Image 1 (cartoon, rainbow, N blue to C red):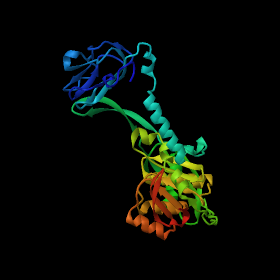
Image 2 (image 1 turned 45 degrees about the vertical axis):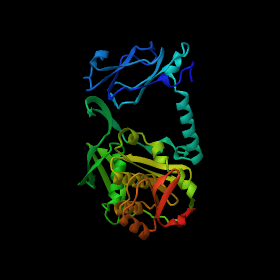
Image 3 (image 1 turned 120 degrees about the horizontal axis):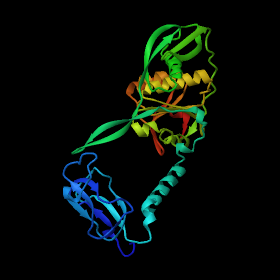
Image 4 (image 1 turned 90 degrees about the horizontal axis):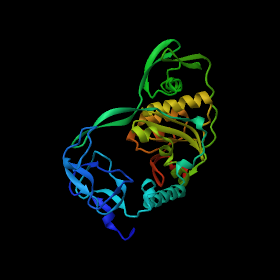
Length: 358
């Protein structure tokens, strides 16, 4: 109860329709005053709404408008669409987070801290490599057309040259394409036997990779030190805690090499195979030791992904998504621990469970 009022503070839609406000949050309204109008069809952008355009929704009591559904939103009958604060001295509350929202947010934060979610990992910002997005206009149709904007992942095409010869065209996110080019050449076996990477650069809107005589040294790997199930679960929220492009566009994949509570490298791309090639490029060019690393990945795990993980030298793959039958078989063959369906409180082990203490 607030100032003697309970459920009457909340206003529900008397019928289905498109909501258009006639007042604003923070406005003082009188009981019976039209607060919004419900229309059968969407109102054209730029048109000022009026109560005569449809079914007016009156204020249930006198007070300040605390909440109101945004214009153009379609609601069913009985949907909560507005609320009023009857206290004359509490207008500022209209522009703050409600007590319920603060309580819910605090509960979520407590749960994340308790579960040791990935956002508590240590990392250097220079080791985080994000994909870019661009806002584009579109028409949103839901029983009516409304103009809106949406963040879309940026995609570019880059010619790839190896020792002066064009060998492919990379289709990827636009950042760090030189790193991707190096990783692609290594992962796809494009570097001839008896040669190794010498130089990588971007020039004339193309990626140029050159090699030289010699072979990259492959250090002996120490036995993998098993990790606990709780540690693995702590990686379950890592990608979500780092990515902005995924949340904005749902158009990128993510991958991170982690060891203990440290993020060694994190990268994103529109293609899941590109993510792995980027990690391969960073590992090669920055001489990152992955002998004890876990690769936390966002994508499905078919045999092609396992091939790239094997080439990367990683012995532990943890993905949010599930594997295919050939992916599992190849992980067994290559002695790669495969944990999928990774969440902050659970995972499914499909191959080589001996590296997890459960």
